[in-house]
Amino acid sequence: MAAAASGRGRDDLAGDGGRLSPLSTPSATRLVLEAHGIGTKYTLGQNFLVNDDVLKRIIALAEVGERDRILEVGPGIGTLTIALLKHAASVVAVERDPDLPAVLADTLYPWRERFALIEKDALNLTAADIGEPLPNKFVSNLPYAVAATVVLDYFQQFPFLESATVMVQKEVADRMAAERGTKNYGAYTVKLGLYAEVAGRFAVGPGNFFPPPRVDSAVIRLNRRVPRMADGAPAAPEVIAAACLMADAAFANRRKTLANSCKTYFAGRGGIALTPIGDLAEATDSVTLDGPAVASRLPALFEAAAIDPRRRGETLDQGEFLALGAALLALTGASAGAAAE
Image (cartoon, rainbow, N blue to C red; front, side, top):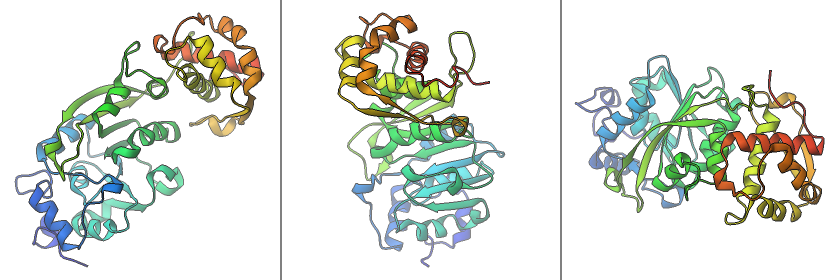
């Protein structure tokens, strides 16, 4: 195994040298890559963070503490990972690049007893892969190509995650934080908003990475929220899944009214699988909806949800989409209860 990239012994990496992470400079990053005979891979979205001040702001925004167990995706050479391990109880990271486990074994050697690596595509991660103890916070410099998908999927699938503090492309952060009625507010915003709410963000320019990306970036923190029905009761998993489906339908033709966009969406589909996701989903069976049948009952659906079908999707908030989801389930006979106990 190659020596640590700084040219020092592996245990020397534990010393901060005035930095939160000794790898947070372009020269240190180059030395790591050269020592292992590898380079950055554009296809995997590898842009290594090389600004220690940004690392400090990430740790502060995520409020990483000594009791926290962190899930990280795309640890790269371990730059952010070291900063996390200096503050948290443990880190479990997911990495798909087969060249990087050997690098991480070196750079994270001083913290090896509190670090675990899962060699897998993050999009296919399961709770069983993670094992015990389960992490409570998700903190990552995410590969931009999969960032939006990973964040939503993890809030849906991993109820043990209390928050996500992630580096993403600025445009993705804009979609995550978009206000109703704005151009960035869409189906993704609605669906993510059913699980989480924005708790802070800051901008990060291309010059903070090696190599510099061609886009601006942002770090955004999202805290888990419990979506509630109009009466204040927590929404059941099947209602949330139906609300997500209605969001997709409402924004299928963004410039059209709800009535027209949803009609086009459902009429053009046959069987639509409605699969609840989340901590209560195991007790809820998946159902298949008939698209044309739903399309024919849209007027009754909008009436039951007390939503004017002449409105557009961008004018609805999460509560209204939950109402549409509950109405969809009731009209199709797929409802297993409108609220969780």
